[in-house]
Image (tube, rainbow, N blue to C red; front, top):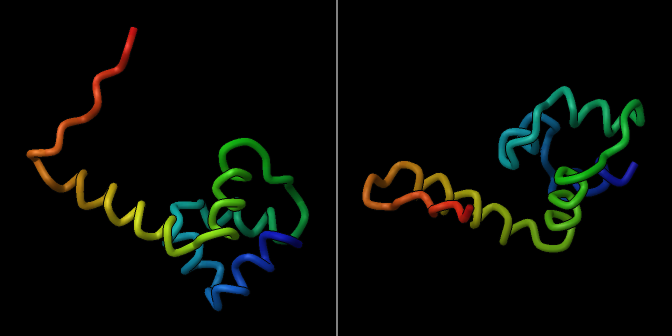
Length: 79
């Protein structure tokens, strides 16, 4: 399955891959075993991970750092 190929290309365990990219481990296992299809935002995330995993990791680290920084404000939603 494509999900497993992406993960194995990065030499990560299921647990590590799920943790790094914020994917529920159960969902990852269901995708890898072909018991559930990957659709929507998770499918897009996996495509980006496959194309440039370092960029995704860097972006997630930045988001995490911003969340811990009280000087960073949440963007205002347009109504």
